[in-house]
Length: 203
Image 1 (cartoon, helix red, strand yellow):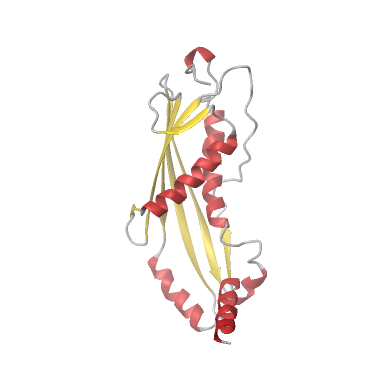
Image 2 (cartoon, rainbow, N blue to C red; image 1 turned 90 degrees about the vertical axis):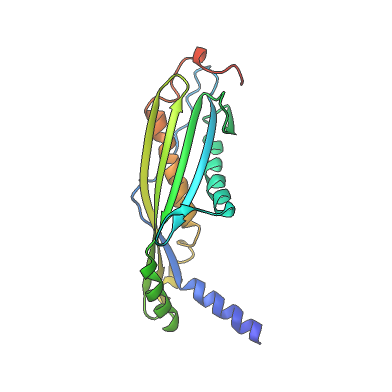
């Protein structure tokens, strides 16, 4: 019986939450790579994840792995690159990404009150994401892209109806959309438009 009650409490608690996209970065769908017969560029990437409530510091290795995994999945699914590797000095394009997650520690207090009220008193907590991507092509073209977005967790009993569509998967999708926007901007800025003679011979 205790296990059943515990399971019901967990379901009740989680279902009383919903996560909403901040919407600061427009939803981005990557256009197909324009195949003009030239080799796709090879990419070297690196990522750093930072975060904290009061001060930002480098996250644990687990946090680094989550951010790197999200970034790599977007890079691979874009189909924009012939090869993707970490810290490759021979690559045609290099992208160094830093993602900083910040929040308000004061949000813990209303969240505690919400829990005591069995989710009849609402509260919310906002995670802010800042992304800085330094991009350089081996012929000297370079640019820094900086984006900010957020995700807001609302804790309130009526959110039980919103949770199926606004669950915790919203958070990584916010970050992935930021990576897509960087790739889209890189494409528009001409990072993928250069002659085959400037590319490495690796295909």
